[in-house]
Structure formats: C-alpha cells, structure tokens
Length: 161
Image 1 (cartoon, rainbow, N blue to C red):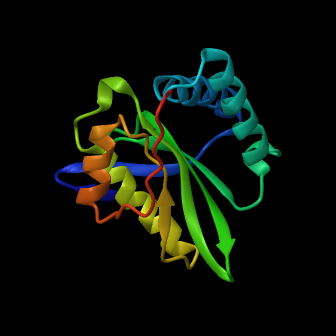
Image 2 (image 1 turned 135 degrees about the vertical axis):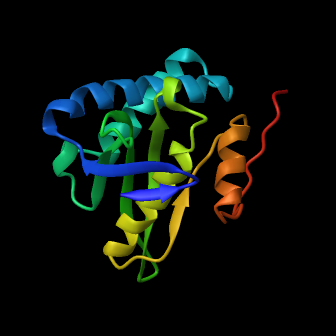
C-alpha cells in the first residue's frame, strides 16, 4: 500500500472474472482517445482491438504483462492499470499501456498514488525505467506525469491537408 498526499492506492492482480469487462472497456476507451486524436470511429476501433489482441494474446496469462485492479483506502476498486516488461538493446524496462481511475474517483490523489504503487511493482521486477504514452489532448495526465519526473522523449505531429 502506498500513501501519497494522504491518499492510498493498492494494486492487486486482476481477477480472471474481471478481465473481460476491463478489456471491453479498455478497447472502447482507447478507441475514443484515438478518435479524439483524429481517427475515424471505424479506424479507431479497429486499431484499439488490434492493439489489445496483439498486446495480450493470452489475456491475463500473457507473459511479461501485469494487469492490476486499483483499490482505494477502503479497499474498493477504483480503476485498473496494465504494464508490460519490454527489452530493448539488452535492457529491460516497463511500459504502461493503460492506467485509468474511475471518473467519480479522479482528482483525489489516486492517480499519483497509483503511479507510485506501480513504480514499486516495477522495482520488484528489478526494472529501473518506466515509459508510457499520453495523448496530446490529455493535459491532466501530462501534468501528473511531469510532476512525477517523467520526461518527454518523443513528439509526433501531424497536419490535415
């Protein structure tokens, strides 16, 4: 359990019974974000489905992937997070594919507490680097990650012509 700014978040491995609902929600949420970033609804949904299928071909049993339910101080589920361990040039790192706090629980310090708890999980695996992607429109997430020490490593830009 991690305490940060008076808030707590505990990460527990996701139960098989919760996986399918999480996956369906995640596919829709990622498609919504892709659509907000300029993809058509059909393209966004197709890309999101392909991303989940290729990233988690064995569901919760996919090697080197970790999916957690996020619990608040009252041990109630308030969201979920998914990261994978990747190897680049002989060095392992973690990449966060998804982190979401339920809408009703946002703005209460749980995102920060979750990120700290996630860092502890990554350290337990002997990994000292975490990466993530954040959509340009998500200014709240940008601010949170920057305040936690994350640095911008790449910027992709486009223009409709």
